[in-house]
Image (cartoon, rainbow, N blue to C red; front, side, top):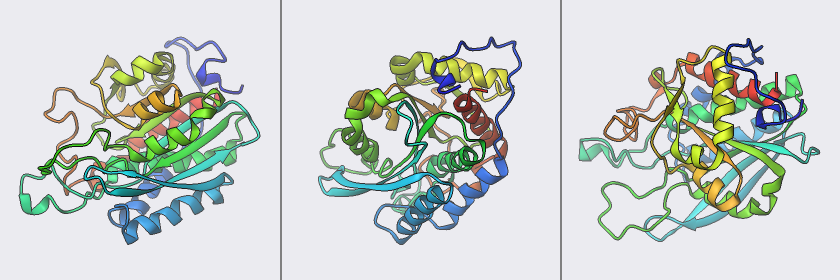
Length: 311
């Protein structure tokens, strides 16, 4: 049964019925709302500190072996950015594992606002950040209840959204996005053989979400993409998980793949036909709970939990 989703069992055909694993969308939605109620979780703020305590204590309450892994990397202006990655391990005794991850920080600037006066305001990050974390908190709760024979590491990356702001006039540094995953990947690259696969969730709550096959996911982990999307199809979630290629996104999975060497995919709402590739509220003051749907969280969480459980 272990790691069935990562290739240890032959996959069912799209026509075969698949029994879904339990996942409560209302619970995941409540975890998203709890983060948003704290305010924008920008590194260095009180909201960020309170959310750090909330996330780590919740993972611990669900029975995961929990740690906060700290470090720093230079941000876009050369200043050192403190990073707090949160790690929860289910069944740490099992050698072969699945990595599940999302970023938990918020962007300090709403740099896609048309009004310059609003560009210095932080992003609330309901969809961009909190939605993926909410799904993974509910998965952590379900792991405790369902007890699958699969080792799982849940990692919440910090400082994903500290990338160079649009209004910056200086010389741009490389690799200013996804600082938390860069740090984690460097710290854990010696363990790459322990991970059968990795799955990143980013912007997985929007009502109109469509998850295509992201370019780097295909490049580094096409087999995992195909298996997960087939699982979604068998569960009846083809409205969200579509069998078509989408654009390349420099997201946390890119650094997990290129630095740590763990084959990792990105479930992300991306539309290459839009100006930015993302919804109109992306990196604006409008990324609030109106952009989070329990139905979308249900599709993502049930697919992922079923994939892990091998049911």
